[in-house]
Length: 144
Image 1 (cartoon, rainbow, N blue to C red):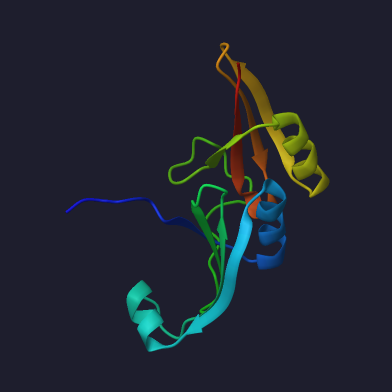
Image 2: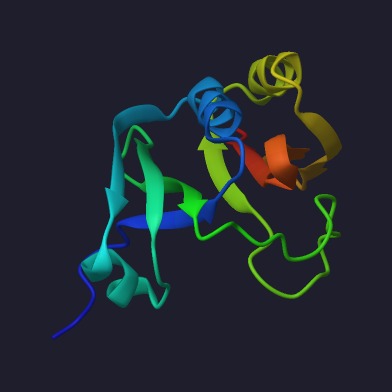
Protein backbone atom coordinates (compact mmCIF):
# COMPACT_ATOMS: atom_id res chain seq x y z
CA UNK A 1 0.00 0.00 0.00
CA UNK A 2 1.49 3.33 -1.05
CA UNK A 3 0.62 6.79 -2.31
CA UNK A 4 -0.18 6.81 -6.01
CA UNK A 5 -0.26 10.60 -6.56
CA UNK A 6 -1.04 13.91 -4.93
CA UNK A 7 -4.57 14.95 -5.90
CA UNK A 8 -4.94 18.52 -4.63
CA UNK A 9 -4.05 21.24 -2.14
CA UNK A 10 -6.85 23.04 -0.28
CA UNK A 11 -6.89 26.81 0.21
CA UNK A 12 -9.68 28.32 2.32
CA UNK A 13 -10.59 31.75 0.94
CA UNK A 14 -12.94 34.60 1.68
CA UNK A 15 -13.30 36.00 -1.85
CA UNK A 16 -13.78 32.88 -3.94
CA UNK A 17 -14.32 34.73 -7.22
CA UNK A 18 -11.14 36.84 -6.92
CA UNK A 19 -8.93 33.88 -5.99
CA UNK A 20 -10.51 31.69 -8.68
CA UNK A 21 -9.85 34.40 -11.31
CA UNK A 22 -6.22 34.65 -10.11
CA UNK A 23 -5.58 30.93 -10.58
CA UNK A 24 -7.35 30.90 -13.94
CA UNK A 25 -5.10 33.81 -15.03
CA UNK A 26 -2.16 31.71 -13.87
CA UNK A 27 -3.26 28.99 -16.31
CA UNK A 28 -5.30 26.56 -14.24
CA UNK A 29 -8.63 25.31 -15.60
CA UNK A 30 -11.82 25.32 -13.58
CA UNK A 31 -12.85 21.67 -13.27
CA UNK A 32 -16.05 22.32 -11.35
CA UNK A 33 -17.73 24.16 -8.52
CA UNK A 34 -20.35 23.04 -6.01
CA UNK A 35 -21.75 23.77 -2.57
CA UNK A 36 -21.54 21.13 0.17
CA UNK A 37 -23.27 21.03 3.51
CA UNK A 38 -24.68 18.77 6.16
CA UNK A 39 -23.65 16.45 8.98
CA UNK A 40 -21.56 14.09 6.83
CA UNK A 41 -19.39 16.98 5.60
CA UNK A 42 -19.12 18.34 9.13
CA UNK A 43 -18.08 14.99 10.60
CA UNK A 44 -15.45 14.55 7.87
CA UNK A 45 -13.73 17.88 8.61
CA UNK A 46 -14.53 18.22 12.32
CA UNK A 47 -16.85 21.25 12.14
CA UNK A 48 -20.56 21.67 12.89
CA UNK A 49 -23.17 23.30 10.64
CA UNK A 50 -20.92 23.32 7.58
CA UNK A 51 -21.96 25.01 4.36
CA UNK A 52 -19.18 25.77 1.87
CA UNK A 53 -18.69 26.45 -1.82
CA UNK A 54 -15.81 24.52 -3.38
CA UNK A 55 -14.08 25.23 -6.68
CA UNK A 56 -11.62 22.69 -8.11
CA UNK A 57 -8.94 23.92 -10.50
CA UNK A 58 -6.33 21.81 -12.26
CA UNK A 59 -2.96 22.45 -13.84
CA UNK A 60 -2.37 21.16 -17.40
CA UNK A 61 -0.71 18.04 -15.91
CA UNK A 62 -3.63 17.31 -13.56
CA UNK A 63 -2.49 18.69 -10.22
CA UNK A 64 -5.33 20.25 -8.24
CA UNK A 65 -5.98 23.38 -6.23
CA UNK A 66 -9.24 23.26 -4.27
CA UNK A 67 -10.62 26.60 -3.13
CA UNK A 68 -13.18 26.54 -0.30
CA UNK A 69 -15.38 29.46 0.72
CA UNK A 70 -17.05 28.71 4.08
CA UNK A 71 -20.47 30.27 4.55
CA UNK A 72 -20.94 28.53 7.91
CA UNK A 73 -19.22 28.40 10.24
CA UNK A 74 -17.54 31.74 9.64
CA UNK A 75 -13.95 31.43 8.39
CA UNK A 76 -11.15 32.38 10.76
CA UNK A 77 -8.17 34.37 9.52
CA UNK A 78 -4.96 33.09 11.09
CA UNK A 79 -2.29 35.78 10.89
CA UNK A 80 -1.98 38.78 8.61
CA UNK A 81 -2.64 38.63 4.86
CA UNK A 82 1.00 39.57 4.21
CA UNK A 83 2.49 36.81 6.39
CA UNK A 84 6.26 36.66 5.71
CA UNK A 85 7.90 33.67 4.02
CA UNK A 86 9.55 32.49 7.25
CA UNK A 87 6.24 32.03 9.12
CA UNK A 88 5.50 28.43 10.06
CA UNK A 89 3.13 26.50 7.84
CA UNK A 90 2.35 26.28 4.14
CA UNK A 91 3.84 29.42 2.53
CA UNK A 92 3.69 29.02 -1.23
CA UNK A 93 2.83 26.86 -4.21
CA UNK A 94 5.38 26.65 -7.04
CA UNK A 95 4.50 26.20 -10.70
CA UNK A 96 6.78 25.39 -13.63
CA UNK A 97 6.13 27.92 -16.41
CA UNK A 98 7.42 28.56 -19.92
CA UNK A 99 7.20 32.38 -20.02
CA UNK A 100 7.91 33.89 -16.62
CA UNK A 101 7.91 37.51 -17.84
CA UNK A 102 4.55 37.17 -19.58
CA UNK A 103 2.98 35.41 -16.61
CA UNK A 104 4.31 37.97 -14.10
CA UNK A 105 2.79 40.74 -16.23
CA UNK A 106 -0.53 38.90 -16.57
CA UNK A 107 -0.76 38.28 -12.80
CA UNK A 108 0.15 41.89 -12.02
CA UNK A 109 -2.69 42.98 -14.32
CA UNK A 110 -4.95 40.91 -12.05
CA UNK A 111 -3.67 42.74 -8.97
CA UNK A 112 -0.88 40.38 -7.88
CA UNK A 113 2.22 41.88 -6.27
CA UNK A 114 5.71 40.86 -7.38
CA UNK A 115 7.64 39.96 -4.22
CA UNK A 116 10.94 39.26 -5.95
CA UNK A 117 12.79 37.65 -8.85
CA UNK A 118 16.14 35.97 -9.34
CA UNK A 119 18.06 33.66 -11.61
CA UNK A 120 19.39 30.48 -10.02
CA UNK A 121 22.69 29.72 -11.73
CA UNK A 122 22.04 28.77 -15.37
CA UNK A 123 19.16 26.49 -14.41
CA UNK A 124 16.08 28.57 -13.51
CA UNK A 125 14.54 32.01 -13.39
CA UNK A 126 12.32 32.37 -10.36
CA UNK A 127 9.63 34.84 -9.31
CA UNK A 128 7.51 35.02 -6.16
CA UNK A 129 4.08 36.67 -6.44
CA UNK A 130 1.51 37.54 -3.78
CA UNK A 131 -2.06 37.19 -5.06
CA UNK A 132 -5.48 37.77 -3.53
CA UNK A 133 -5.79 37.12 0.20
CA UNK A 134 -2.00 36.94 0.51
CA UNK A 135 -1.64 33.67 -1.41
CA UNK A 136 1.96 33.31 -2.57
CA UNK A 137 2.80 31.50 -5.79
CA UNK A 138 6.30 30.90 -7.06
CA UNK A 139 7.03 30.63 -10.76
CA UNK A 140 10.01 28.68 -12.12
CA UNK A 141 11.14 28.89 -15.73
CA UNK A 142 13.78 26.33 -16.68
CA UNK A 143 16.60 27.78 -18.75
CA UNK A 144 18.34 26.18 -21.69
